[in-house]
Length: 263
Image: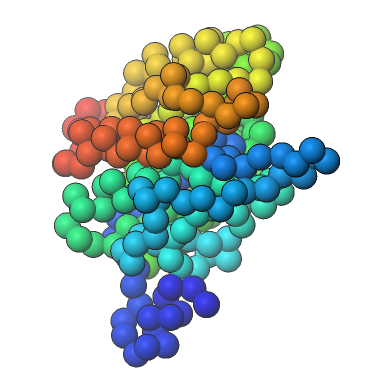
């Protein structure tokens, strides 16, 4: 039974989040911290949850069945369901910002799916439409989407064309999601990738770090420790990234929105 169901059964008003954050992108957002492969190729999560990622009564998540429930690692286990998920940046982010939001409940909306290139997130594609559906559903309980946290790009580093067109594709994604949600000032916090599948990682990073759109900021994951696969962040690196995302949100967006023109 989810968090809302438990509270309702006890005869209290159901808890619903007032501050909502969309978590989207690919595997490093979905979380691979603590996930390793057995010699025979099967992956498993070690189950280790750092103190910064522990559940809290005022942190909820929107499940794959569109119900609010208590948020806990792995946040994306029923969203990136074809892969084994572990620790991502979402819970450490949530725990770092919750005390700055007036004590009201915070909601996380996991949408990330591993191995997905930016073209798979274009309007009309299944991943984009599912993110849109989940984002709209999250607001029906009266909460407000405060930011989209986006960590993606590793799959766009193999081909020159994909890396060359990344900036335009990401700008279009930002425009589309703001338009389709009716949130022209929606804050976007993007992560500059720390690794990649191919040789054009720096070109994708250049696009991410050089993006100049209103209410869009970027944190740089380069230098954070990677697992032995040299692609995914370690558990502790994910904790650090969550804190970096929290700092970016609290510094740039935990205030009245900018009055400059939206993209």
